[in-house]
Image (tube, rainbow, N blue to C red; front, side, top):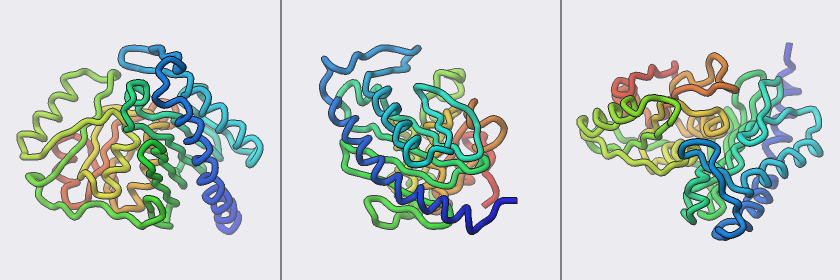
Length: 269
């Protein structure tokens, strides 16, 4: 049986360490941003972008964890990994297509999972000068200031981001978008799932929906969103770490309505 006191001390150490790590990773990513000639841009698949910076940031993070917390495992978008008792999940650059094109809407996303449950989340958008940070039970912040989800209660006054996944039929995505517009919502897409979830957490939007997303895109955001008072679906079910799941994150006042439109059941509050 886990010792809560030991777990609390262990989580506190990682919570304090990850902030400094993320700042350094952001500097590495920024050193490549805007340098199209140095990015070595390639495609892993249809609309699945890769740059040299993705690999550099992930390798740097793995080295940091190996030095600071040698018993922890790491799973990353570029170098893989698997489920573990103490697991860091990183997307070195979420929004790589944006990054490659000089759009500042991209971030480094880092989550820490203990025994299958996300406990810590950090999303760092260095080109925007913004960092979201949360610990389960400890609240969520943006640049050190507490954040909360929007108070929106009427879908006709809402803005919902709908992410697009090539792993599901296009008709599923278009159907959700059409139903959201039909219900009076404004719909957007910014091509970064991690930032999409973060924006719900601090009230810039009222919901984020995607028919399939990988764990490295949202492991951090789920903690941040929950601590900001958002409702979510049961993303952390099944083989979510390695296979991903559909995602729904919403402000509480419109969560039920978005859930019905997306066809994704909400987890218990």
